[in-house]
Figure (cartoon, rainbow, N blue to C red):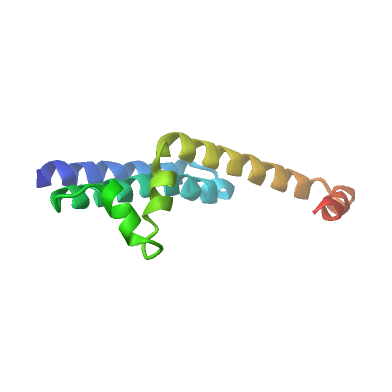
Length: 117
């Protein structure tokens, strides 16, 4: 069990490192933001496992936590984590590319963007 888990962790770390190495320097923040929903999915699965080992389920534990834990938000963010992370990373990469393109456009464009935002 532990060898499989360590192999999985190694694979995830190598893949994440390669993603940061291959992404353009301006888009590394988009890569980091894309990892947030996957991290939320992982944490919610751990919380579910802990609740099941305790003889309960996450659906029973969730109302009793109230606002002390952000389990509801983690569950909402973790559902469909792969699709959400791809969309967040793609949208942020597009915004970053357009922002840098506007900055390269010169003074007239910069004034136009300042008026809008």
